[in-house]
Length: 252
Image 1 (cartoon, rainbow, N blue to C red):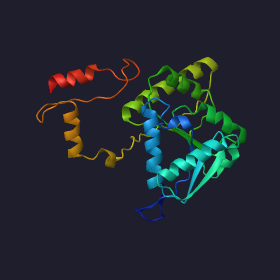
Image 2 (spheres, rainbow, N blue to C red; image 1 turned 90 degrees about the vertical axis):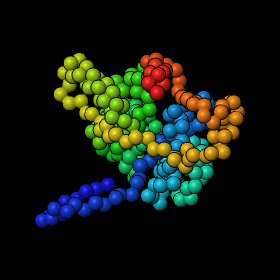
Image 3 (cartoon, rainbow, N blue to C red; image 1 turned 60 degrees about the vertical axis):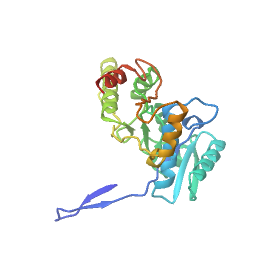
Image 4 (tube, helix red, strand yellow; image 1 turned 30 degrees about the vertical axis):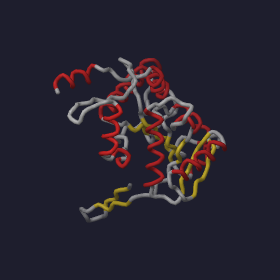
């Protein structure tokens, strides 16, 4: 979206630009029968379904490491209702990403994509990632490595909440401080960190009285019984800690 100030007027002209980002697709970013359930895969699949339904574009660009993955992406988007054109771009040909202008990747670590872009030109296109978990060792190491890669100010890592943004900003600041002290760096480019919460397909969670009755009968619950459901991997430092849930239940 571009906001342009007209001369002699206080009113701003708002023009929405057509979405042209190339979506990097990998089979591991979506749910399947042979992969364990994970939030990032559910989020990735939900994003593609929402993108197919709501994107304001005549063409969707897909970037992938091989032609078979591009074909899989075409089939997947067709299942989600997309009937328009899909162009495929191999990541081994980064110059072709200048046409969409942005590469959207399904994780927060932009490093390896930035090194590939460097072969074609730093300002040829932007790279945009998104956070899922931010506290695992692999992700923290990836953010550290990213700061020593050719990432620029026109790149971005979408943060799904203000809390996530504060964590990512702190980790990048720590990395930048290290690089400055270690190598006397005068410039350590930082990616932008916009906050965009994950979308929710509300139709999938619409209240269904019949489903409520069936579920309660299945588990032997009366109408006035209180049931609590929670979902998440139990991991004290990286994922879910049950203590906040127990404290909330105690207060309730």
